[in-house]
Structures are given as C-alpha cells and as structure tokens.
Image (cartoon, rainbow, N blue to C red; front, side, top):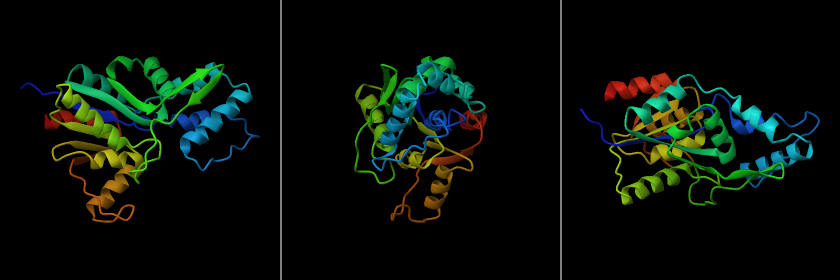
Length: 242
C-alpha cells in the first residue's frame, strides 16, 4: 500500500537532543558570574549569556564543541532518517533554541539533509559574539513564549505547503515541554501527538483530556496521543498503525 505524503514536526531540545542546548551554553559561564534574568523573555536572557561568554573569552570553537557533543536521545536519529528516507514524511523542526545551535548539531550528527525546514530564533556569530534574534513577536497565544508560537508556525507551514500543492495526509508532532502543547492543540482527528513521558507536555495533554482548565480555558486535544521514551517507541507506533 502506498503512503501519501505526511508531515513530522519535532521540537529540538530534550526531544531530539538529550540536553537543552541553551542550558549547555549557560553552563559555560564561569561560576563566579551570576547572569541576571532579563524579564523581557528567554531570548533576551540568552542574548545576555552570549555577551558574557564573549566577554570572558569563551569563543565560537568552545561553544560549538559543547553543542555538538550533546548526544541524541536514543533512537531519534534512526527515527528521523526512517521518516524522511523510507516512510514519505517531510520532517521539520520548530524550536525555541537558535539556528546556529540546531544547524551545527544536525550537521555533526549527519541529519541535516533529513530536515526539510527549521523554524527557530535566527542566530549567527559576528566578531566572535553569537547574536540571536527573536523568530517573531507574538501576543496572540498565552500558551507560548512571546518570541515563538509553535502552533502558529505549524499551522502556517501546513497552509503554505497546501498552497504550493503539497497536502499532508497526516501530521505528527513530537515534543516534551509546555510550549509543545500549543502545536498539539492545532492537530486534527487522525493526526498523531507524541509527548515525552514524564515531561510537562504530557501533563498538559492529560489535564486537557481530564477537562481541567489550562491558562483559564478548557482545551481540546483532537489528535491521537502517544507517550514515548525513545525514538524507537515512536517508530514502533508509526509502523504499527501503518
């Protein structure tokens, strides 16, 4: 039986990678320095972290090595390769990390060619300083950070692909954190939501299904929900349901 084109959207930190890339960068700050949390959001805070690293002489090579040394979660490389190479999926990443971290990690782990598109905060090195910008500035979604509404990004991408002549037979979303709840709410009946077991996204989905208000509203999850611990768990579900 031939499979129609499908879409797999992934979070990055602690979904594909074992550790959070921003936290790994944060750990490079010398112990005698305590970065101040900037109330203007996480991206502004990370901008401050990168400025401290630059000032302290922690250069691009040190930061890059710390990021590419993060191991993948068990089975994630195999899952992504199987989806894109054998199972007729377009694979995208929607992440609140940044483009430099994601791209160097994917390149190191030989997954760059398996990812159709990455949606994240743009970042690049300039004179030794990693400069990061917000992906967008949003005020319409109280489930998301001000700089990145993953649900809106997912919805816009699906619409743009449809306009370009690519209509997905099914969409799956894989994540772990609270900001992965919004895109899961955008999935339809018959789509697949994969929430990492023991993490906040799974808790939010469980609360929604128990009719508990989330941010003062009842939320409806329409997709089929599956918990996962490894990429192989996800692959088994996909191959079982066909």
